[in-house]
Image 1 (cartoon, rainbow, N blue to C red):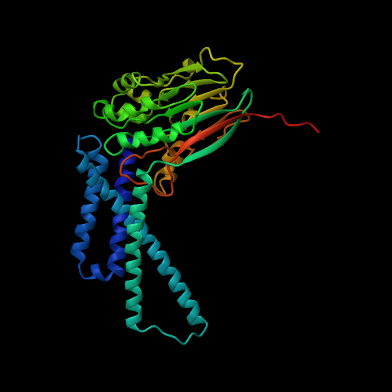
Image 2: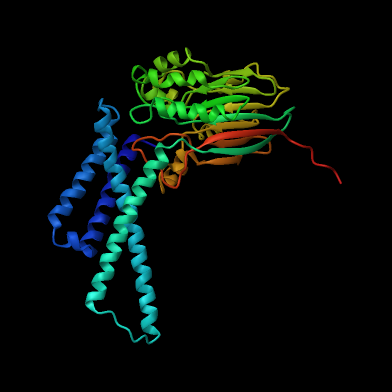
Length: 388
């Protein structure tokens, strides 16, 4: 999707959300009904803060507190919009019930005082819902994710294996060392055969996050920790980030493969490398010399990689990038760009794809109806079907 189109969509969507909230509060809320200028100023401030966050805060060296303040404008705006939508749906349902009652010859008629009281109750309900949605989305984003177990059968696998998978940690201005330590502790508790980090580990210049990444040295697995790049590493200097990660207790797979006890593991650099002209993905090189006697697993950050490349030589492809939409209903746009959102997919009779929702977030600290996850992949040998 072209950058100008993305920018245009963001401008329009944010503006429409403010217009909807403006019309809703002006029609129904007593506080703002007679304070139109105050409402305009509040919504305008939110809009400016959102635009500053999306187009300035990520790339202009804003400090941690400014970043949080601007990101809060996005969270408040989203929570306010959802609360208004739910409130209007509730109002419409109430009107429908009232209409049915009148049609049934109900004798009770609400006087103006009771109608005013019910409107105030509804406004307070919207306020409470706004607080709940905002705090819930923040908690979802900042908490250590739960472990999701996923069973996958692989043809040719000689014994059961486990893979602890994470993606999209986005270490930077918001998620830092404490968050990484929490992730490491959760992964180590799984006692996995291998650990894979499928891109977007870093979301800041490497000099700023080196200290936050050091807990990765404590990751424990039986056959190693493996990493492939995501698009955000390219935004902040893929070469310097990759060089530092190679000093940690993990193996960086840059268009290469390694033979493990029961399967081959290959990794390709992210598709962003094609645009930046640095470390572009090279599937042919990643497959070179792979052992055909063992099942093969491919790490590729973006799911649309499987649409642009022939991955039929692999039994399983592991991706991230989508965040499962991160906040509803952005999963619609994710599907338009990537075609895969979250979960286990079958690409053909042999190849399966798992797309993780990730452990972190991009942008403001919010997740709603798109829970983060640490994935515990349980690989099992595919059993032959018994012939009757």
